[in-house]
Structures are given as structure tokens and as C-alpha cells.
Length: 510
Image (cartoon, rainbow, N blue to C red):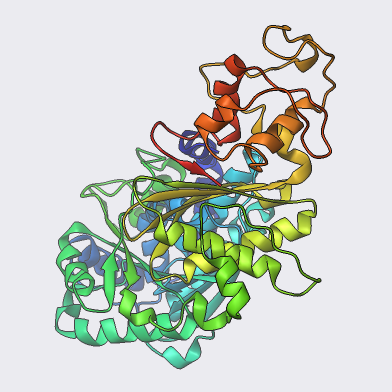
């Protein structure tokens, strides 16, 4: 799914979010029946935050005021920040929302999941653990979450925890991908305690096995995030959040906020809006590489001498023969990761991983994904496709900044997925049986001829590189295949299709 497609479908959810937020805040206001004095004090505290000062979250009405002014704005910011982090994942993910406030992180995750569903794809299972020390903010978060329509709420499993996020022992690691979120967690007075905050964040990271930290703050507090970023425990990643999805005032919420302020004789010079006037500082931090030394892929995978030799990338075809459970698949995965780690700019790798068994393809996705994640010399930059559809692609980058592509495809989908998804500048054989004899052999070609040509190109039975492929004669017989072959003029687009639409430049197709 393209970024534009995701943004467009997310944009259409604005009325649903507005109504849910307004309804939750209306019930909060009516059910609690706060005195005018309390509402005025809560409003005064809110303006302290609006002026860049610290806010006291121990006022009973602060959850209402915060939600009316900031909740949808924070949701919007987190939609932008989480989209590029959640969309590439295929494994369940657990988000540790430290200082969760009104629960905007969970709202953003549910919104993105619904947008993906409307686009015909899906996100993996998402769990959000929201932790906050203010009982009034936790109560507001619960009310806001309950106000969402059931179909949105069903996308995310939300757990609330009342307590200080720095209580590291309260967190437990799960068998899921983990991401830490600090959304407007840093206060103006935290400057003197950043060393302790950094230590707590690293301990939480170690505790839950989360190697990424998403930090959002107002520009006025960006200097605090700078100090955190410059510590030895974190490295700032290249990160591009999605563009703005919504803009302008939030009508239903603004109307309710006007009624609340009118009841206590107050007015606001501004209306609640989707975007903060001063913008937002969004950065993604990763644990420094040294923090994970010894915890990577090879610490959990021990190969014997023969397997080590087979896992070493070479320019020769390698056939692994062994009984079930002998480690053939693990060697394959290790070899793919090493190909990525050692790739140079002269030969950016493009790897096709396939099997007749769809469940095996799913397992290979998981093993290779974890292998790259555990590597000290490579990282995943993006992914696309749907493992459930038998077609999934991982984009990775090694320490030399060399990009690599690994595509996972069920064997029965090779002929259609690889051959019938050509570049936009040409149409690749839409009707094989009507092709001109000048392009293919004169003899009759059945519907499987593309698959046979694919074996010649992809599996390297006779052609190991582009030049050899173009020069391979049409005569002869492939194992288990007839002698029908494409003629030379048709082989240029054939190679491009079989090479997964590789960009210009040298690439070794494996």
C-alpha cells in the first residue's frame, strides 16, 4: 500500500474520531459533576502546559481539559509517527506507552489498523501497555478508549497500568516485537534529571527487549530530547514520519469545550485543532550497537562445520541435502543474512526465497527477519506485502549503507507474481498463447512456458547473470521442462521481471 493510499484512508476517519472524543468528554463532564472551582483550576493548569511550563496532573478535572484540548492533536501526531513503524511489521508488536496521558498512542494504532483494513491489507496484532502515574489521566484514557466504535477498538489490545513508568520491575518482556513510546513525556523541569531518566529508559528497554524509542515533544523542549539523544545509550535513526493527515479546527470537540468554559466564565483565544501551532519534534532513537553486543543472531544459532561452510555466501550454486530437521532451512536463513551483511555497492543483493510449502515460507520470513534484526551489521528499513498472501518483501541495509531486497514467494505464485508484475514502461506477455512466433519458438507453447523460463532465470539452472542469460541458446532441454524458450529480444524484459524490477546498476540475482 502506498503512503498516499494510507493517508487518504486515514483522513476519512476524522469524523469518527471527533465524535468519539466529544462523546467521551461529554460523559466525563456530566458524570463527574465537578464544582466550578475545580474546573477553573484544571483549566488554569492546562494553560501552564500550553505556555511550555509543567502541568500538575493531580487535578481531578485535568483529564477532561487535556482531552478536549490535546487528545486528537496527539492522536494525529502519533498517527504520523507510528505509520512508518507499524506498516512494515508482520509480527505482533507490543507498544510500551510511557506516560500514556489520554491514550493517544492506542488511538493512533487503532486508526492506522482500520485504515489498512479499508485498503485491503492488515497490520499485525498490536498490544499497547499504557502507563501513567495520574489516576485522572488513566481514567480519561479508559473513557476515551471505550468511546471508540467496536470495530476500531478491536484492532488493539489496550492494557492500562496506574503507576510510575520508571518502576522498571513492573514491566515484563513478551514474545512480540517491542517499541517504546515517550509522547510528550519530558517536562520543562526534567533538565536536572535527564541522566536518571536516560538510565530508566535504558533499563526499561533492556527489560522488555525494545531497541527503539519514539520520542515526541514540543519544539520548546527539543533541547531535552537532544541531551537524551546524545547519551551513550542511544543513536538517532533516519526517520521520516508521514505528512499531516488532518488540518484545521475540530468542530465537535471545540463546541463542547466552548460549553465547558462558558459554564465557568472562561473563554479561550484558540480552538482545538488537529495540528499544534508550533509543530512537533519527532525523533526515533535506537539502542547503541554496543548495548546489544553478544545478544544477536549468532548467540542463539550454533552451526556445525559443514553448516558453517554451506552458510558462507559464494558465487556458486549450492544444493543442501539432508534429512528433515537437519538444519537446511536455518542454514539458508543464515546465508541470506550474511549475503546482506557483506554486500558491497558493486553488487547490491536481490534474493528470492521460495518453497512449495506456504507454512515453510512463513517460517523463513520469521527466521530471516529475526536474523537481520539480531545482526550487528544490518538492519531492516522497510517491508511490504502480506505473508498470509504468500508474497512478502523485506528491504534491508547493511553497515556500508548498501540496500538489499529479500522477496518471499510461494512456489506456485512465481509464474504470476514475478512475471505478470512488470515495470510500468512495458507490458509483459499478458496472453502467452497469442505471442508472435518471432518472439518465441515456433512450436506451440502451453501456459507453463513462463514458469520454465523462470527456472532458467531465477533458479540459475543455466544462467547465472544477465549476459549469460541473453546468450543462452534456445535449443536444449531443461530438467523436467520442454525445450520451449524465449528468444533473445524478449529476454531483456524477462530478466527485469524475474529480477524483481531491480533498479539500474549492477546487481547479482540470487
